[in-house]
Each structure stands twice: as structure tokens, then as C-alpha cells.
Length: 116
Image (cartoon, rainbow, N blue to C red):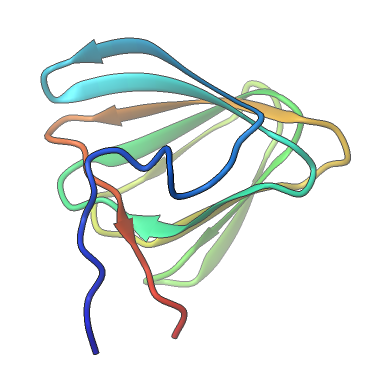
């Protein structure tokens, strides 16, 4: 089976209501994403960086593999996903979900996961 190739810019792989970059330094960046009630960030992992999710508005449901886990976050709550751990981000509410994701330390990539 062909493994998906990591990409440096995942913005074309999935739709969001809004995407803004707040900081970018070598090895670290802060992105703000806004998802509608029906949008998701598809299953993926990162080779070198961790994702630290911080919810600003709405409710996030985060699905993880290795081990399988589901995390629900409300505004002000944080969860860290370590490098290499597959995860999927969904909106758990009926209104828009707005969150920050701090990504680092290391070179960013987005490794899409094929449905298994």
C-alpha cells in the first residue's frame, strides 16, 4: 500500500471557515483555525512536531490513535498531541469552533492518513 507523502502546506487539503497565521519562526508556528459545525481537520500526523490545541470559542472533539482516545475541549482548555500520533479534529458543537494550534518544535509537515 502506498504511504501518503508529507506536505509542507496542508491548506489545500481541507476547508475551514477561516485560517490565520499569528506567528512563524524556524521550527515553530501558531495558527488560528475556525471550523463550521460540519468541518473537520482530517486524520493526519506530524513527523517532528507536536500540536498544542487551545480552544478560544466553541467545543472541540479530538480523536486520537495509538492509543485510541477521544478528548473534548471547551474554551480555555488545552491538549497536546505528540509527534507521530494520528489525530482528527472536529467541531463538537452547533456553532463555529475557533482554536489556536501551536506547532513545534521542529519542521512542520502534515502526513495525511489513508482510511484503513
